[in-house]
Image 1: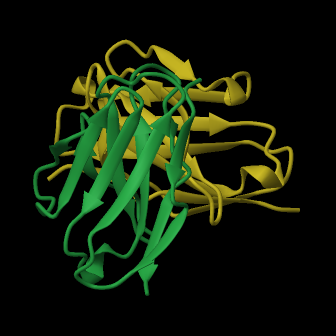
Image 2: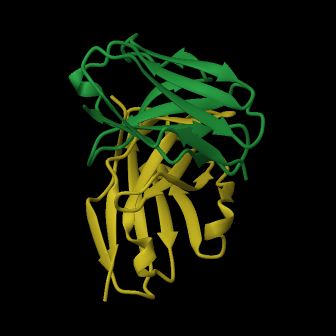
Length: 107
Length: 120
């Protein structure tokens, strides 16, 4: 199974900061990677798919990049509602796997 | 609007089974596969498997093979996931999620999740 690692596991940031989260895969994914945001007590919310395509309705301050085995989620100008945990997920082949998550909290 | 509705809470004793439901509405049920994903308290997301709503084909994560069964009742637009031989380690929120489409197994729609507590 493809393993996903995320870094950092947590970070503290201020409103207006730019935040970058990395997801690294144990195999080449091409562009079959998605990013989710999750808040406590809620299901995940799809942000990005195909590594860089913004889901409809997601603010443009979220962006994704990368291909192969290394991917990045960037949040520009962090807003109060962005404090949450972020997960990557590959969909290259089964079994699907998720990264362990990156928690973004207020500095 | 598209909805996946799941019951809120289930409580079971160790060794028991649980069968969770996921009622879909707002789209053509047989056009999208359903996956089940669980999340233990304070932990990450774990994909358990998926079922094709077109032909009932299933693909289970190796960890759950032999202990899980996913089914659908298309006339009721409902998917089910049964997990047997429960242990306290199975305490988690269980989500159903709809695939975007064939070949794109990421999830734009999720149920609210069912909290399964396994305790004696």
